[in-house]
Length: 178
Image: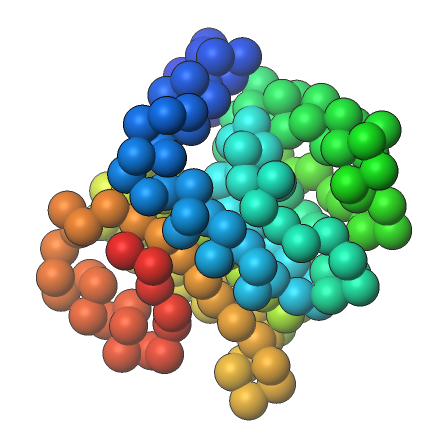
């Protein structure tokens, strides 16, 4: 159901999630801060149209980038954005893979445990509900390398989440930009 909903407005989604309102709220600055920390093999959950791609620092720090979304329509928009960035020379040597999947139940089976150096999510946890978000967090923490092996997990979300859920996330050493 979610996939079909996002497919419907994929072509105009950036008007909702980006633009002047996002800048005014400081979301663009948060994205730049968050994505500047990405390194190694990176998994972005809920990539949508690829709105975050401009915030990555595509250099020798990012070896590969896996962009995951539940919506094929959103991924098509992200692919177009990546192609434009390649044409402009912004993305050169980074291997990029697009994956359509449900992040609440398929990550560990699809990628295996301890696969990624960095896992990033911006705001997709906010639309999953507490149970979906909890499941997604479990999946994400299984595919990111352990902290002692250099694994990092970053997320940005709005503050209307339950305090209990946030506390459990942050007590596991996960960095949040809220």
